[in-house]
Image 1 (cartoon, rainbow, N blue to C red):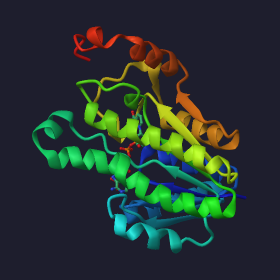
Image 2: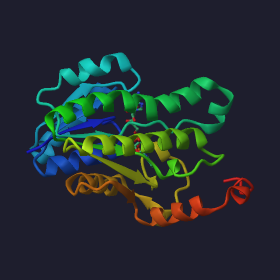
Image 3: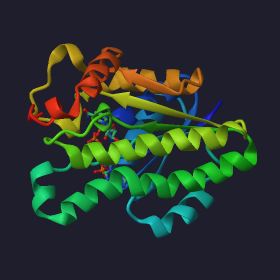
Amino acid sequence: MKTVLLLGAGSDIARATAHEYAKRGDRVVLASRSIEDLEKTASDIEHRRGAEATAVRFDALDYESHQAFYDALDPKPDVVVVAFGYLGEQRKGQAEFDEARRIIETNYTGAVSICEIVAADFEKRGEGTIVGIASVAGDRGRQSNYLYGSSKAAFDAYLSGLRNRLFKAGAHVATVKPGFVRTKMTEGMPLPGPVTAEPERVARAVLKAEGRRKNVVYVKGVWRQIMGIVKAIPEPVFKRLGM
Ligand SMILES: NC(=O)c1ccc[n+]([C@@H]2O[C@H](COP(=O)([O-])OP(=O)(O)OC[C@H]3O[C@@H](n4cnc5c(N)ncnc54)[C@H](OP(=O)(O)O)[C@@H]3O)[C@@H](O)[C@H]2O)c1
């Protein structure tokens, strides 16, 4: 039995992932800001899956609290899924730096702060897996969401470097890159059906990436081809596309 820590566990993707792990009998620790919601999810998981589930408070932006948060975990996790994220509003971020900062700090700085603490523990123990949920939005900056996209690109590059570092210690880092997913984050957006995934699909990709020690996984696979094409467009053409 593994202990799986889900950071940003209120997220629809994290919740679906917690259910998938619990189905296998693993112990799940749900960490996020809305503790009352998490406690409900934890008791639902215990009730439906018969697996141990607990809720703990975690705020990705409260950097000072991260070490004490991790030190208090007993037992320490075997798997850490970094699922918190903030899409924000691109136009608002262009006009108000506070919004831009919240996007950058939630998706990148907060993730680095907690991942460095987890990495130090995994390195010492010589085991453990971090699964970071990045995004295809990080594969190329576009005018419609470059604040979010660049923060995910930074997270993607960070995970790559961390994977490189932890490999020697025997610990693993997997990067999961969803395209569109039907969650709270995308509520009300027109999502193109064939390239949109349900949170359960992302959850299965997380378990697969973790279990098979995959490095970078696209959910759905077609996104690898789509982003391959998007990345191949020469910059003089790309800047005229208004994407
Ligand atoms: N949905 C998509 O189309 C899509 C595509 C690619 C990648 N992703 C990524 O997948 C991950 C999960 O997204 P989702 O779609 O499941 O989103 P979601 O349902 O909107 O959940 C996002 C979660 O992040 C948490 N969060 C935000 N700021 C936080 C903070 N400071 N501390 C702790 N938790 C915080 C929120 O917690 P509260 O519940 O406390 O607000 C929320 O539960 C994110 O990293 C997202 O960027 C999503």
